[in-house]
Amino acid sequence: MPQRPDADLREKDVTPEWVYRRRRLLGGALGLGALSLAACADGDPAGDEVALADPGEDPFRTRETLTRFEDATSYNNFYEFGTGKADPARHAHRLVTRPWSLAIEGEAERTGVFALEDILARTTQVERIYRLRCVEGWSMVIPWQGFELRELLALFRPTSRARYVAFTTLADPAQMPGLRFPVLDWPYVEGLRIDEAMHPLTLVATGMYGRTLPNQNGAPLRLVVPWKYGFKSIKSIVRIRFVEEQPATSWNRAQPDEYGFYSNVNPEVDHPRWSQKTERRLAGSGNRLLARRIPTLPFNGYATQVASLYAGMDLRRHF
Ligand SMILES: Nc1nc2c(c(=O)[nH]1)N[C@H]1C(S)=C(S)[C@@H](COP(=O)(O)O)O[C@H]1N2
Ligand SMILES: [Mo]
Image 1: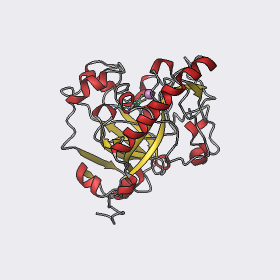
Image 2 (image 1 turned 120 degrees about the horizontal axis):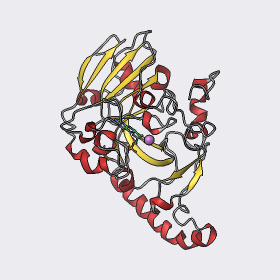
Image 3 (image 1 turned 135 degrees about the vertical axis):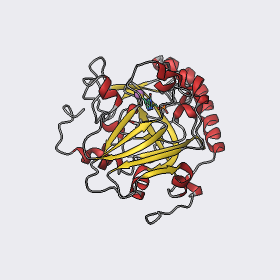
Image 4 (image 1 turned 30 degrees about the vertical axis):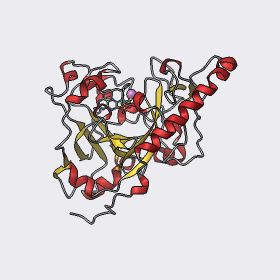
């Protein structure tokens, strides 16, 4: 193997579950107290406790109000288990996540099939609290545990011809009832430019809220690319391929005029069927249906970190 990065689990970086429980209790108490106030003020009782985006904050750990664990695990997009938001929580228990292996292919010095345990042993576990903005117009704030994708990619020594990275989700009809429906061209595929893939914000999540990643959130390993629309954060990855040409992506293939390869969160570029200027923030203890609508930020609030990756590009054309 190539030289190992620091493989020790850095315990201080992984917040135990009880911390989230306590935060949630606190959030709940605040929410109740402020409920009547907000109802008087603007008739938006659900949104009062939600701390809004602050672009000056630590990009790795936003201090915005967390989405409740229950909401982050019951309102999901994972079309392999059905297109309804509740379908993944209902059906994903059928997904067998251990043992799991990851195929590494293409333009790299080292390729092959690797056991998940070996990958975990060679990467540094970190915690990241990220906003995730779905292209449909809602967003969540989720504490993830995992490792930086760049750390994984470096293990395989990509060659100079590796200009993009292509990702593939498992497609097993025996475990994934949604594959019966031809809503997408299975398997689900996604891609990043190599510099996007190597950016320190780009995470491979293996856990959330201090627990093992729930199946409906993409166990045992999924991408989290916080400055892009949620569909770029591909779940339950079985293959990573280094490629020279821009790879096909599922949503672009399905509706090329609606979903581009880059899919950077951009309030200035509307989806052909709806505005992208605002989002419903699903956070705190409030009712999801009454969630507060907040302005969407360029690059989902991560412009300081990532805007330079796109210098000189026309982001209306490369949407
Ligand atoms: N394989 C796969 N990955 C996927 C999807 C999917 O349907 N299949 N949905 C995407 C979309 S649209 C979003 S918004 C996020 C949702 O992640 P979450 O359920 O963990 O919040 O997963 C993304 N990753
Ligand atoms: Mo999404």
